[in-house]
Length: 97
Image (cartoon, rainbow, N blue to C red; front, side, top):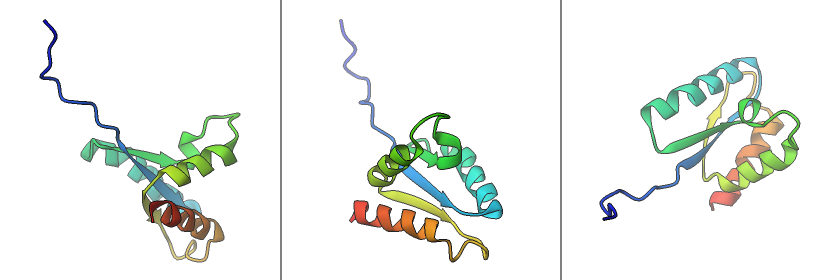
């Protein structure tokens, strides 16, 4: 007899982690490692770690930006004026809106 009491599998919330610069990179890596341990329902994405070698990074990044409705932005004094971070957050805000 099949077991119908199993809970349905719920997809994890994709969370884009945005960063620019050495200090923000360290913070972003910490979030990527730490968050799944405390929030089981999320799937963090960090470009430096989650784009496979040889992959078309621009395509992967664009897809993740358009499919993430949530982001963590790691800002430091040095990265406040990063055009790259502004681009990523602008793309995510349009996708979430």
